[in-house]
Image (tube, rainbow, N blue to C red; front, side):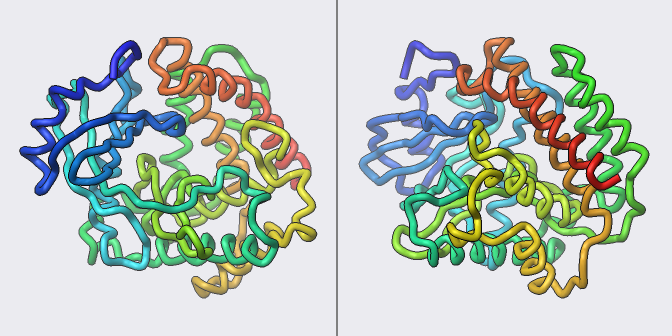
Length: 344
């Protein structure tokens, strides 16, 4: 590959992989996937098979962002649990043949659904896909983190307080203009922080339909992907982040479910989805749901702002798409303010 920012030198990479991955041989092609805003991801084709390489982006990076080593660690730890993940093959150091840290994992053949309304499958399969996604989320939150070696993967307790501080800092570091709704949202979250209830689990951090792969011919999750934002935290953060999809407009870059006739399409309502999760985890209900949802909107807005800032700085994985993320920050802030106004 050549002629693009962060291009990979195939001639330099091939012997390195042959030396570090048992059985790897004959690297013949490197193709960058169009998806993957944060960490550029590549399909490796070799005589020994196909593989996936995921790397840090080039250029100056925000502190604590793009930690591909954390992705590698958590997926390796989850091997053999009820949470399906690809097999991890190798993690490089920062001084690698491509000039940045990367890892290599097995290539899986499956389906990724980019549109949460699932227009290309039947109504019965739509319901089954969402139920499988729900079951996988509950299974992830039930993982014994100490048993799988992730007991030190994050700080226990005060998750939302720490996360609000982190993402406020990330947002301010990448801020490009004053957005009144964002400032109001941050202030509301600070004053409506619920008391810590002691719940701690492994959280994915970006749990949504297009970050998982399904079997080619069945509504079965075969891999949960994109673990860059994973940590130990509060399980309701993942649930609210996913349920935010019900409130995002379908006619937008987010392709949410707002505006979709969910009942006619065979898709569950937000209430039914939350209830199914609670049943699976033995929870009677969720207090402070408005806070969890509002925080999810803010966190996504901060992520989008970071992607947009990288585009302005020339370091985005997909610059054209990154610019649309910048435009979405105001939409997310407005939806969050509407949510808190409706429930105040």
